Image 1 (cartoon, one colour):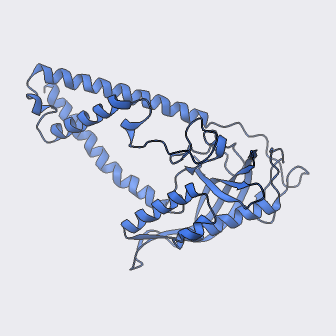
Image 2: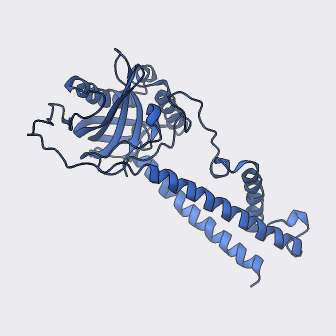
Image 3: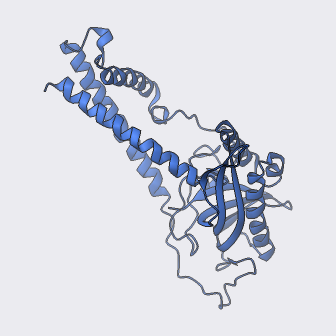
Length: 322
């Protein structure tokens, strides 16, 4: 078996693996159909790229944002979104990444369908074609390694500080409100009181309800424009798929403050929340169950709330926990 035949076998194997992985990815996505789509979206002001500290409710690190309008190094919320486009459009890849993506896509298709990776340039029988294939593979491997190193570096930044010993609800430095939030040690730069926790729990329920009703106007009163833009996009995708996501029976089970701070005239609070809910996706018009069930499930997420001085809290970010 020559080199070209071996490469065809490798590419076909990759194609088979991808074909098996896609349904699994879709199934995971369908299971996390609630508001936010089971991903990490939004902005935390100047701390967008710093992980909120771990808490007793969410002892593992919050995941980095996969959707945010805050640029690295930007002090606030609302900066233009970073350019997307997938793997080959990631920072640092530039024109070389785009060329590699184009040649790789054309080459892989040619190999899969038996035409060779660069058959249009003179056929695989030429030594020149073979050298180009090897060179392209080396370039792609190096790009992949570079991307993986940057990804691990970003993830390591989200390790977060090690949480201190848990403080029981019977001590003087911590107490549990009627809403189920443990207020922690009270050492945050911004003081968060019982009325704030009541607002956080209320927003948890109201945002899920507005999402379930596809009430974008209501969502605008509960969340930042950035978060509403993500919700609107997700709702549009549901409509395109002829689906509607219904969330009900949202109950806060446990919650505590990760951190609270002030940036100028704007207050921020990141809160870990473990809650139960009924999350199901129905076929629009018929009501046929597509995914989920009537059985409640649990989720643990870190929600960040923001308010201008003297105004009401709004949701500015949702992060999943590992």
